[in-house]
Image 1 (cartoon, rainbow, N blue to C red):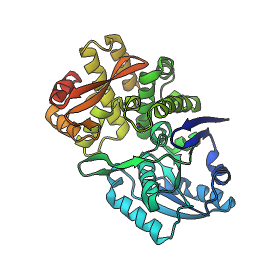
Image 2: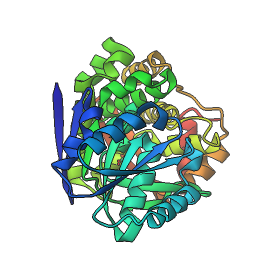
Image 3: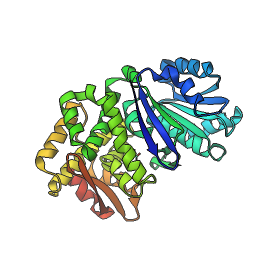
Length: 354
Ligand code: GLY
């Protein structure tokens, strides 16, 4: 069965969700591009699992392929890897009419997108997400970036892909920890916009979070927010639920905690802070914390308030002397709250940090 979600941003494209689609990538791309060469960008862990099948499918459709394999892990989503990728593309003579293709999770997708946006002032790229987190969130919406020493995603731009091809069968090789990370983003969508989805997750657990219809529902919610506010000045910022606290936790851990784990702990902090301020009912907070627990996700952090506040001040979501927090009001509804940087310590304490 095939599901699609059409995204109408500065470029219109379709996200296709279909089990087994990896073997049809070449034929699907042939309908969309006249590129001669496809440069596949993939991580060291993902490439051995799926690289050969992907290349076969592309060759069968008449594409020439190149491969750039980068070391795995968020610590390699940096200017060094980005520079090496650009030099590789230039060395191989990739032209603006060719195509980049990301085969991997969020790190590979963000890196590939940023290279596609900037190599020769921009060429097309396609996302084939291989993690649940990348399928429901990072592969869609055109955010591209690499990290700087000062913080996550500090160099990047908006550059929408030509197409996003999701094959949920690829999740079969994903380890439980990485699946749980993706589930954190699925919970985020439920808290943002869909009470029924939240109840599906409560009943169905991790297996439900990986289902094709759940992936499609998350992408519909993301589509609505991206179409309303592609460049992240207003409602799209709701997608940062759990991320302001979460990025600080991730950064304080030196990226030992994965993104989804930090987002889960960040959502729990947002829920506690909102409940303490009387914005979010206690009963809803308890349900959210229980669901994160059911998924084996962290709901607390041991990093001191001062360190977390320092990391938050470096976050690109800061705007002058203020920062926007996303707070839940109900399961299925959230709001933005602009807070002064001077009040961050108070918010962190309300969120349960010490
Ligand atoms: N991952 C959040 C966004 O795309 O806006």
